[in-house]
Amino acid sequence: MTRIDFHSNVPQKIAYVCRLVRKAHATGATMVLRVPDRAQLQQLDQALWGFSEQDFLPHVHARDPLAAQTPIILADDDTLELPHHQILINLGADTPAHFARFERLLEIISADDADKAAGRDRYRFYKERGYPLTHHVAA
Image (cartoon, rainbow, N blue to C red; front, side):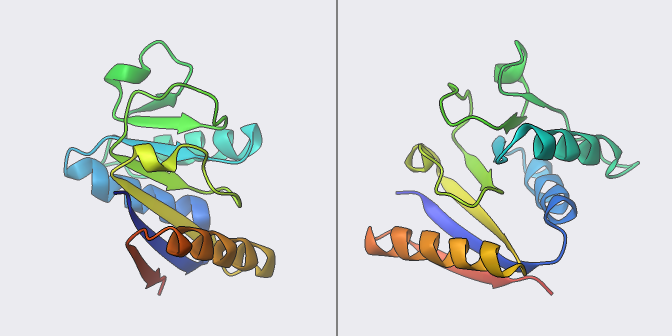
Protein backbone atom coordinates (compact mmCIF):
# COMPACT_ATOMS: atom_id res chain seq x y z
CA MET A 1 0.00 0.00 0.00
CA THR A 2 1.26 3.48 -0.87
CA ARG A 3 2.68 5.42 2.06
CA ILE A 4 1.59 9.06 1.90
CA ASP A 5 3.47 11.97 3.46
CA PHE A 6 1.98 15.45 3.57
CA HIS A 7 4.35 18.41 3.74
CA SER A 8 2.34 21.51 4.62
CA ASN A 9 2.94 25.22 5.11
CA VAL A 10 5.65 25.10 2.44
CA PRO A 11 6.75 28.68 1.67
CA GLN A 12 8.23 28.01 -1.79
CA LYS A 13 7.12 24.74 -3.35
CA ILE A 14 9.76 24.56 -6.09
CA ALA A 15 12.72 25.18 -3.75
CA TYR A 16 11.29 22.77 -1.18
CA VAL A 17 10.82 20.05 -3.78
CA CYS A 18 14.39 20.53 -5.01
CA ARG A 19 15.63 19.81 -1.48
CA LEU A 20 13.40 16.72 -1.20
CA VAL A 21 14.60 15.49 -4.60
CA ARG A 22 18.25 15.97 -3.64
CA LYS A 23 17.70 13.98 -0.44
CA ALA A 24 15.82 11.14 -2.19
CA HIS A 25 18.27 11.03 -5.11
CA ALA A 26 21.18 10.65 -2.68
CA THR A 27 19.59 7.38 -1.49
CA GLY A 28 19.35 6.06 -5.06
CA ALA A 29 15.57 6.46 -5.27
CA THR A 30 13.72 6.96 -8.54
CA MET A 31 10.89 9.48 -8.61
CA VAL A 32 8.24 11.24 -10.60
CA LEU A 33 7.52 14.92 -9.98
CA ARG A 34 3.91 15.69 -10.93
CA VAL A 35 3.14 19.31 -11.74
CA PRO A 36 -0.21 20.81 -12.75
CA ASP A 37 0.86 22.48 -15.98
CA ARG A 38 3.62 23.10 -18.50
CA ALA A 39 4.58 26.48 -16.96
CA GLN A 40 5.32 24.94 -13.57
CA LEU A 41 7.08 22.03 -15.28
CA GLN A 42 9.47 24.51 -16.92
CA GLN A 43 10.02 26.32 -13.59
CA LEU A 44 10.83 23.05 -11.86
CA ASP A 45 13.09 21.94 -14.71
CA GLN A 46 15.13 25.16 -14.44
CA ALA A 47 15.25 24.99 -10.65
CA LEU A 48 16.57 21.41 -10.67
CA TRP A 49 19.36 22.32 -13.11
CA GLY A 50 20.50 25.30 -11.06
CA PHE A 51 19.65 24.12 -7.55
CA SER A 52 23.11 23.17 -6.32
CA GLU A 53 26.62 23.39 -7.67
CA GLN A 54 27.58 20.27 -5.70
CA ASP A 55 24.62 18.08 -6.64
CA PHE A 56 23.63 16.84 -10.09
CA LEU A 57 19.92 16.00 -10.23
CA PRO A 58 19.46 14.18 -13.56
CA HIS A 59 15.92 14.65 -14.82
CA VAL A 60 13.87 14.59 -18.01
CA HIS A 61 10.25 14.97 -19.06
CA ALA A 62 8.19 11.78 -18.98
CA ARG A 63 7.92 11.92 -22.80
CA ASP A 64 11.70 11.95 -23.25
CA PRO A 65 13.21 8.80 -24.84
CA LEU A 66 15.68 8.62 -21.92
CA ALA A 67 12.96 8.64 -19.23
CA ALA A 68 13.39 4.96 -18.33
CA GLN A 69 17.13 5.48 -17.69
CA THR A 70 16.76 8.78 -15.81
CA PRO A 71 16.06 8.68 -12.06
CA ILE A 72 13.97 11.88 -11.91
CA ILE A 73 10.98 12.29 -14.21
CA LEU A 74 8.87 15.44 -14.66
CA ALA A 75 5.23 14.89 -15.62
CA ASP A 76 2.36 17.27 -16.29
CA ASP A 77 -0.05 14.68 -17.68
CA ASP A 78 -1.60 11.78 -15.72
CA THR A 79 -2.21 9.78 -18.90
CA LEU A 80 1.50 9.23 -19.60
CA GLU A 81 3.05 5.83 -19.00
CA LEU A 82 5.69 6.30 -16.32
CA PRO A 83 8.85 4.22 -15.98
CA HIS A 84 9.29 4.65 -12.20
CA HIS A 85 6.96 3.74 -9.34
CA GLN A 86 9.03 4.32 -6.24
CA ILE A 87 8.29 7.95 -5.23
CA LEU A 88 5.67 10.34 -6.59
CA ILE A 89 5.88 14.00 -5.55
CA ASN A 90 2.63 15.87 -6.20
CA LEU A 91 2.69 19.64 -6.63
CA GLY A 92 -0.83 19.71 -8.09
CA ALA A 93 -4.07 20.58 -6.30
CA ASP A 94 -5.81 17.35 -7.29
CA THR A 95 -5.28 13.69 -6.47
CA PRO A 96 -2.90 12.01 -8.93
CA ALA A 97 -4.77 9.47 -11.05
CA HIS A 98 -2.37 6.56 -10.53
CA PHE A 99 -0.84 7.34 -7.13
CA ALA A 100 -1.52 3.79 -5.86
CA ARG A 101 1.11 2.44 -8.28
CA PHE A 102 3.82 4.14 -6.21
CA GLU A 103 5.48 2.95 -3.03
CA ARG A 104 5.39 6.46 -1.62
CA LEU A 105 3.55 9.71 -2.36
CA LEU A 106 4.69 13.11 -1.12
CA GLU A 107 1.97 15.77 -1.14
CA ILE A 108 3.37 19.31 -1.11
CA ILE A 109 1.01 21.96 0.32
CA SER A 110 1.80 25.69 0.45
CA ALA A 111 0.50 28.25 2.96
CA ASP A 112 -1.98 29.51 0.34
CA ASP A 113 -5.60 29.10 1.52
CA ALA A 114 -6.80 27.46 -1.71
CA ASP A 115 -3.85 25.05 -1.71
CA LYS A 116 -4.48 24.19 1.96
CA ALA A 117 -8.16 23.49 1.26
CA ALA A 118 -7.29 21.23 -1.67
CA GLY A 119 -4.68 19.48 0.50
CA ARG A 120 -7.26 18.84 3.21
CA ASP A 121 -9.58 17.31 0.60
CA ARG A 122 -6.83 14.99 -0.59
CA TYR A 123 -5.93 14.08 3.00
CA ARG A 124 -9.56 13.09 3.68
CA PHE A 125 -9.68 11.14 0.40
CA TYR A 126 -6.61 9.06 1.32
CA LYS A 127 -7.65 8.63 4.96
CA GLU A 128 -11.12 7.35 4.00
CA ARG A 129 -9.43 4.68 1.87
CA GLY A 130 -7.13 3.55 4.65
CA TYR A 131 -3.77 4.76 3.36
CA PRO A 132 -1.03 5.27 5.97
CA LEU A 133 -0.57 9.03 6.38
CA THR A 134 2.08 11.20 7.98
CA HIS A 135 2.20 14.98 8.22
CA HIS A 136 5.22 17.27 8.31
CA VAL A 137 4.95 21.02 8.81
CA ALA A 138 7.67 22.96 6.98
CA ALA A 139 9.75 25.08 9.32
